[in-house]
Amino acid sequence: MSDSRGRQTSDQPPQDGGARPGPHPPEEPERRGGILMGRPFGVPVYVTPSWFVIAALITWVFGGQLDHVLPGLGATRYVVAFFFAVAFYGSVLIHELAHTVVALRYRLGVRRIRLQFLGGVSEIEKEAESPWREFWLAFVGPLLSLLLGGVFYLGVQAVELSSVPGVLLTGLMVSNLVVAAFNLLPGLPLDGGRMLRAVVWAVTGRPMTGTVAAAWAGRVLAVAVLIGLPLLGAARGVERTTTDTMVDAVLAAVLAVIIWNGAGAGVQQARLKEVLPDLRLRDVVRRVVEVTSDTPLGEALRRVREEQAGALVVIDGRGDPIALVRESQVREVPEHRRPWVAVGALARDLEPGLRLPAELAGEDLLRAVRANPATEYLVVESDGRVYGVATLSDIEQRLTAAIAGR
Image (tube, rainbow, N blue to C red; front, side):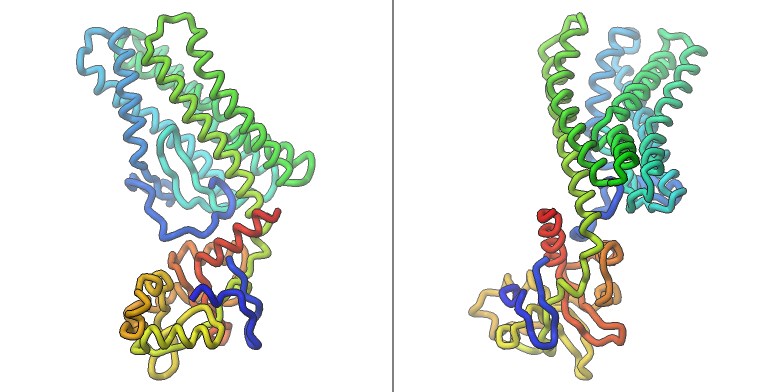
């Protein structure tokens, strides 16, 4: 059916192919993102499978260090180390909740929080409306980490340093201060990069200029981490094993890749925000051919070619649409079998969420697509008349082309 896309007909308009804060491009039916741990402030918090990898790594490394600090623990040191890993990610969750509370205060919406490998992510639905709101939204996370570091420092003063509580509180104090300092580094996708973006945005009046500046700072930061972290480990003057050196190199590489990719994603999200208002559902609609469920697929496709259409809609005896024929299912039917397969077997029932108003555009369009994941949508006029069919792939292609053209 896709070979008919893009052909103009007399009663249809021209038909073209299709993070963190800000609009998200449409996506396939969304995975939950991990194990649901709760809904603080109404926002779901998920722990991804990658968290268990980093928790195991922290347990192994911290447990090895405990053998030197508290040698009497024996194998119990790994239980203590695992408790530290959980408590540390509890601190990360508080960091992310700080972003969430401010985002909700500004009515930006938060889809979910994910705790994952090397940190957490708050998926904020909209961009801040002003640079200073953006600055505060970014700064509040490191601020909470600094405050937590101070709280754990006070706890350290009240216990014996050479005890299990003393070691745990010291570790949590240091780790929260490191999280705060790292996140304040001025480069996307870190909080410091978003703060830099806000400052440049405020000075120039152009959010895109701020994003580009913060993205390039992020790429410079990625290179600095890749080179500097192993050198910093070697310069500490402590006897180090080959394993220690390899861990530093791998950690530096992983961090550098995450920062580099995050910086690029930040620019892409900013470009998406610029082009999003021009995305109209009417511009990505395919003309449809209406058939009954018992129509042979071969006959239906002949009519599609004849009428220069791009999609099939199943109707009932009264002429009302009841299902959408899935293009992916059509492609799987060999050509020699198409005269013997009824289109009804390849269709998805037309649920309420699969009917979209033709006037949808911009963020409203993406919000509707995310709320009702599917590969095809029936597009209708305000009076209920069928306007056409829009496919997820066409919407994605339109966005990709618009972003690439900027």
